[in-house]
Length: 522
Image (cartoon, one colour):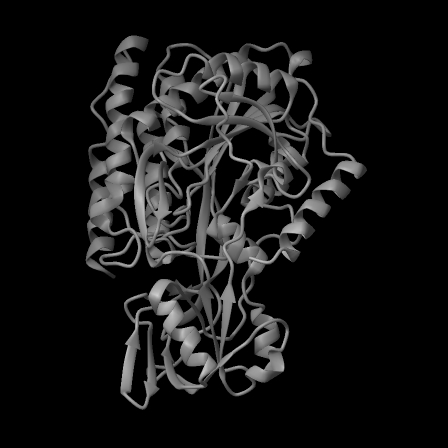
């Protein structure tokens, strides 16, 4: 176990022993203490290692959340899930290229998750540059593939309802994000594996080494049994040049492939209307203090409700799911998330059938306090601005409520209130949308969202974590979601509105937009 993992375990243990020194005397006292608790939680989460699904750090996070439920006065419930693990340390991966000038070590950006591993001596072979679908040319060689970070039209993903600050164009016409580009344009590892390639090196065409560093992407694909890595910047260009000259290379990607059990953890506050529930959702696995920290908002809401001195009108179910970064292990269909599994396992809390309770609404909280970073030439730097908040509001009534509450937000923000198009509803709010449960889902999508924090470049290092998360923004977002919940709790049962999906002609239009992006030359 690493030193940071041991430190995290000590933090969790201390939190269990001395949870918090607040009382239940008054609402005003609780809210003041709640703010200090929120600051404490942000500091704790910011100190943690990356939390790949089923890792020791992930398990500690789950137990920490369970401990916070208990400290608040709620009973944590655990659902076990078994996940595959692909563990490779970025400190152990290496690439050396041999030319007439000798052996050159090349700095790599990140491991391709669930690609494959090598033994300690690595795999050695000629580099070959592959363009298009000429997979057979990679037989017995190390394939090098260039991957574009293309712009995606936002209208293919969202319909904008309103934006804040009011009257300003917040969401650009197109967005770039490594998560989207790696999924849409990344190398076909199954094809290369079937063709007999030794390994694959994916090189970003138009991305700085700082942005590419530590990216845990794509995270939605199965295990491929072929070692693969990412490279970018000058190092990436050197690799492409070497591949076009068929130079010899050695790639080392030592690691382990095994299974581990991790738990979704959840709890309940019973309300006056026991037959109606409101679901509050987030997930626990992640890569940095932003991805994922939504459970801070979930705990903040739970704390405020428990210590308000009032019984809520409706039953509130708090769910922190495990598996968001290992969806292939627990889901079977495209539009399923880790929350889908909780819904399947616990229909008695939401589907309204056969005497079950009915979920009348949901809140989903992800990626709180995110600050924007962007490529500026060859450097990846903070802009000093809050990252754009995507706030899904999936019924007319949810949109009305969010608009009212977002107008009251006190801090600087950039927010787009949206409904999803047919391609995807991003994040763990997707299962609620598919189940037609009216919901408000808040998430930022910074370019570093899936970047693992490192001790040294390339990528965001530990000393820079304070520059990706803003405490005041976390507080403001949490208060906004709490205020939204207060309106939802009091809403009459017939006023939540209906969730409408995009029709057939809209789906055709969305697919056409995506095909245009896929075919466009970079």
